[in-house]
Amino acid sequence: MSQRKLMAVLSLAAVVALTAGESRASLSRVEGMSLSVPTLSQFTDDYVNIYYYPASVVRQNNLVLAELGNNPSGLSDVNVVTPSSVTFGEQSFTVIRNFPRFGAIAFQMKQSALNNLTASSSLNNEQLDAIWGKAFSSFDFAVRVDITNSSAETSTTPGAVVVKSRGIDNLAGFDPYPFGVVTANQIVGGGIELNTFGVTPAITLHMSNDNRFEGAVTYRKYSLDRSSTAAGNERWQDDGSASYVVNARAFVNQGDRHVWVPAAWYVNDDLGWTVDNFGGAAGVTRSAKETYRQYGVGISDNMRVNDNNLLLWGVSVAQAKHHFTRSDAAIVAGETQELTEKTTAVPVVFAAIETDATKWLKVRVGANRTLVGDRTETVAFGPPNVTTIDKTRSSAFNLSLGTGMRWNNLDVDMTLNEKFPLTGGYILSGDRSTPFTRASATYHF
Image 1 (cartoon, rainbow, N blue to C red):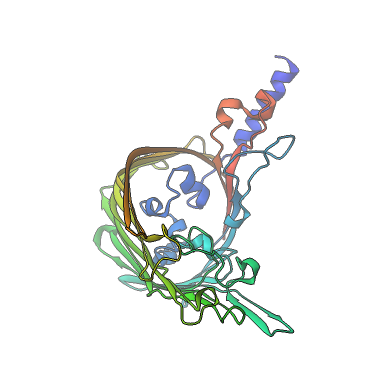
Image 2 (image 1 turned 60 degrees about the horizontal axis):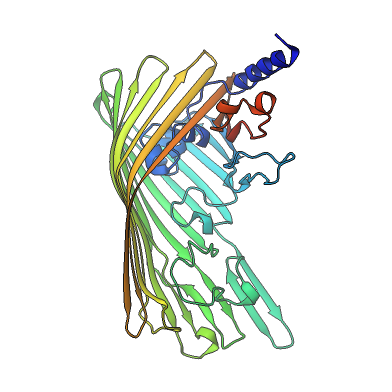
């Protein structure tokens, strides 16, 4: 064997060794099993779900979890035209600590509210995300509280112009109404900074044969308030009702090998808003009602093939609906008066396997396939009003690979770059793509 080939083989072996191990959670684990979407991750018992089912925190060991980031492109910055896109905004640091009498505490630090389904890209200044839970004889109880908060204020003299904002971004030209026209998806799609307060009480009911039911209800309030003493005291503020989330699932043991997990969820986010003194015109108001809803049901079978290997498969049906409507008149003809977007996923079929290749090497492979139906109905201001309906049907397939390694009490999980098994990396093929696209580390104590 030539020295070049020997070096390539040894380097490949070293990379495989660095992907070894056993782990019970982290975003890398569920992503490697193609379950990273929260509505799919809840079909397996994993502490990545404690923020959707807070009462499950009492079953977790003491641990420190670090999500190290994500590089979805798999690119490397070395001698390549296109730079890598490491999303440091997905980093987080979580501590879970069980106290014998007080209960369990989970505390997560991160920049953005990653555990919020609809508006997380608009919640960029998190101050608190904590869970307290306690186990009782026949049930567990927990409460999660999460808060994001930021603000900005600018005063200019002479002229005594004061611009205030709850949320510090998108003050385009110090305009409290930063998008110029009235249209849909300005908050979620445009990334307008929001503040939010959420509280989630949760319960787990323990039944015979180690079966259990878990439920959680989230009450959430979004806030948005921007104003300026210039241009007629224009003010933009939230005008939506409270938002809420309902999650429920059960773990039903069928013998020693099978655990059936049925689950259902409903998410209702109300992000309506209003603008007073629009464009500096006293008494002129522009407003929009805007809601985002998600709901679905499903079931999975977590099957133990042997002592350490998991085969998971299941099916779910789900729908997401966005509705936007205005009651005021058009500013410009052709603007959207009403918009309804509906995406139906019937069915979502998913499967994953997690196996011990060796005592220290964990390998994960997962996939999901979805039949997707999209329907969009748009009503534009006239005269006359014009209604446009678009319908599409498509199929989406996703495949993921993951690995993990354990050193004593430390687990390191990684999502494998799908190109790497085909190229062997730079040494074997000259491909500079990174071997992994996500990494997580968990220390148990």
